[in-house]
Amino acid sequence: MIKFFVNGRKINTDTDPDTPLVWILREELGLTGTKWGCGEGLCGSCTVIVNGNAERSCQLALKDVKSARVTTIEGIPSSHPVKVAWLVEGVPECGYCQPGQIMNAIALLGKNPTPSEAQINYTMDSNLCRCGTYNRIKRAILRAARKPK
Ligand code: FES
Ligand code: FES
Image (cartoon, rainbow, N blue to C red; front, side, top):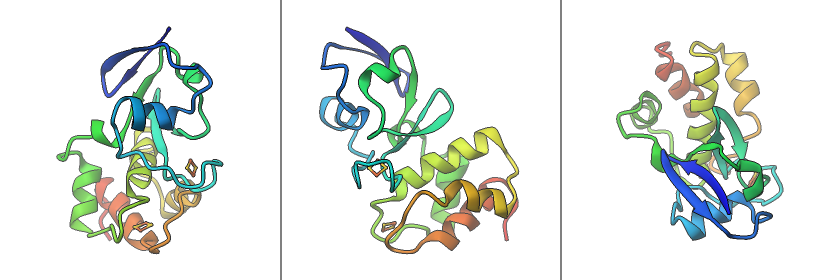
């Protein structure tokens, strides 16, 4: 039995401890906001926050999050400054990559509330967007950091 927390809710599960976290979230908990992309840690669409750090949930097994606090896109209120900034800047196109982008951005701002453009580029570089929303993502992060461009 593995215990951990998702969006503040205590989870007890005896699913195979080697199951990727992304499948626990999507299939067991019904939290389908976290997206499956490459499955190889390359695209960032499955990004969630684990104990304050952005992590790729396709690369973490259930056993890796024992006792951890996991936050998914569903755990972020619509009033959160990053979600608000995303709407104001009209960031999404198809939307598939966006939960992972938002979670990575929130983790960044949690560690560095006023990142430079270079720091934003460095952190967000590994979250891919086939629709090319990168400039709007950067503007939204700067806006959320109260540094609108
Ligand atoms: S699905 Fe996890 S990084 Fe691509
Ligand atoms: S908004 Fe379509 S992949 Fe990013």
